Amino acid sequence: IDMIYFCRPTGPTGPINDGWRWVSRQSLADGLAMPNDSGGSVPPPEDVRLLASRAFELID
Image: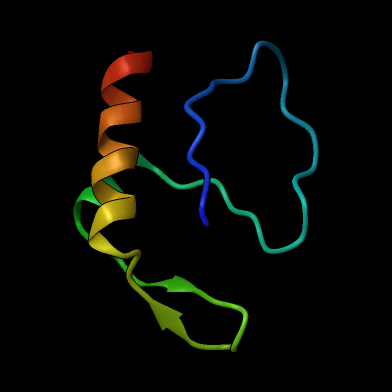
């Protein structure tokens, strides 16, 4: 089960965990392929893109 949390940093960001990455609204909207744990690259699933789009709308 995936849990989706909408949040934003309240101060400077530090290093992020291995396997995590910051992504832009545009790269998600464009469905750009992103590196995965298998060494390849795939675009995020549609449900993730839709939820991320909603999160960007809410925090603007």
